[in-house]
Length: 458
Image 1 (cartoon, rainbow, N blue to C red):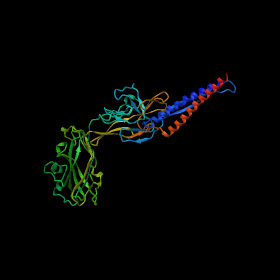
Image 2: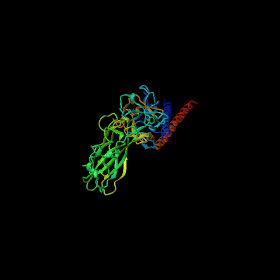
Image 3: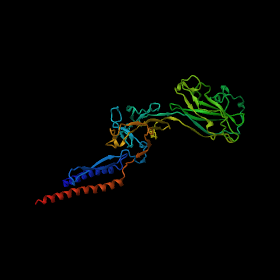
Image 4: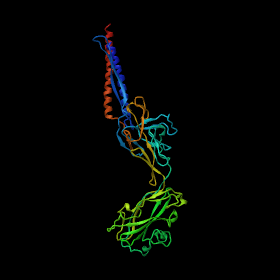
């Protein structure tokens, strides 16, 4: 009868609105949960068919709760370099364990990028899930293989050791005195002849004495420091100086006499600025061969060093080298490189490269974060820890590099906020409360009508 169906309809209303209340409660509770995706409840009417003309049996209502997983939350700036957000599609790949992973281990997916190193240096988020990516080899080369899940490993940001930072470039800011008198030795100067080079004088011999000398510190591939001296001699040709780069001591290099590494001329324009067209000294980076080389200028065999390219290219900085009527002086020297450095921190760029920064200024790429995408992200199964598992409805995941193939970019030092809007949730809370009360009123009214019907027998 319709009274009974009305009562059952009211019960379905209580059940449906209870489900809606549960979804709203979860949303409100997770308003500050990183990467949380809000739940929504959709109501669907139930129809009970009847063959009697004019009769009506109410069917009630059912509730379907789903999570809007594909919805992008706002990215908010954070102070941690290992806090990561994804600007666009995709999820971080995470695991329950840091080491000993096999292809059979379950991979989960999350947008909660609040990663910090654990006691062993592995990156894990607040839920204890470990971040996966492709690791770099010993040369810093990363070879992503999206088709092979076993190539993913947990990213470690502390067990990196030390790293040298060999010098590759150096620049000078100096002035050579245009009023300098041409030395009488200039007439005999010839860098190709050991006895008439400035290198011979620098090495303590009877060579040509330079008019001005300055030194730079160069670090090799092992982090050891070496001194390279730049010697300048005023030429009898107007607006030109002879220049040599010499190792001090000369025994640091072999394959040359008196430590001479390179030589040439430095030319100036009439206004005192560097004439890059006619300057021949260090017009390209100077390659110092490996200690095992047998030809050309190379590191001494006792040092056991690889080939190193050092660029002291004056022609690249016209404003840095001048010839004015003022005392020859060095204003500043800038050179990269340094001794072996210890890890000072890590950064992550938008392509997902995890970069280790060292105290000597060196940088090394140690890993690249992997991003997983799905055909239907809303079909994922939610699990504890603000993470998800793949289902038949979501489709299998596809591994991608950040920013490639529709995957979002990594947004470093940011966190994705919850998609919960408290004003919307509180409004829904009021509506759900009223609907629940109204459903309970249906039951009360149907009960009173049944009581009236029963009483009519008396």
